[in-house]
Structures are given as structure tokens and as C-alpha cells.
Image (cartoon, rainbow, N blue to C red; front, side, top):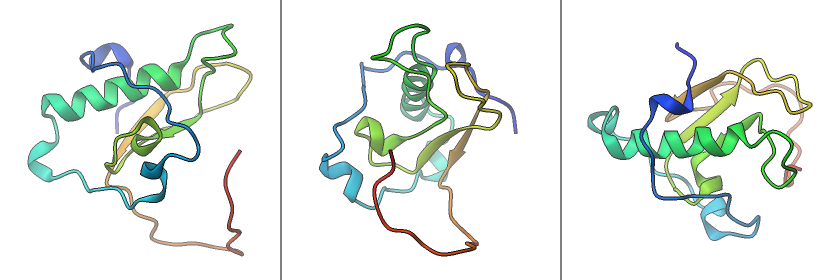
Length: 116
């Protein structure tokens, strides 16, 4: 799977992180249909996600993220970015894009609560 770069995706209407109490974060996201993959709308959502996740160096209001899910920007679709080599401290990780991810195995105790 190739790493993702924000410049490879077209500009989308300006999206930003939704507040933690946003309803979209408590809904089951819609799967991305096979015939939508590679279409402009999905590419635009991914482009927006990459721009948000990459943040702005030195700007505490726009930090670099290690992962992001589409619902976190108000889009209820099953799209996530994961910084596979994230080290923290503001360094930009290489992101992998996952469409329709599923948890197929879990280990250990489940702890309920909000992240952060």
C-alpha cells in the first residue's frame, strides 16, 4: 500500500475537526461503495483529511496528528488515515489510507471511554 501525500488529492470544501460532542462521532459511519473509490468526492475527502492531519508546523491550534477518521471532520464515511511511522513531537508521519476498515481481532480488556 502506498503512502499518501496531500498534494496528490484535489482541494475539498474547507473541512475542519468537529467538536467532541458532535453527533456524527456517535453514529455508525457509512461504508464507501466500491464504485466510489477513486472518484473525485472521495479523493477530496481524503485530501482534506491529509491537510488537517499534517497540521501546520509551530501552530498549536493546528497540530500534526497521528491518525484521523472521516467522522472527526464531519463526514460519516468509513475512511481513516493512520500515521504508520508516527514519532510525535510535531514530525509529520507517513499516512496510510484505509477505506472500510474493520476490527477483525481484539486482545486484552476492552476499556470504554473517550480518547484524549
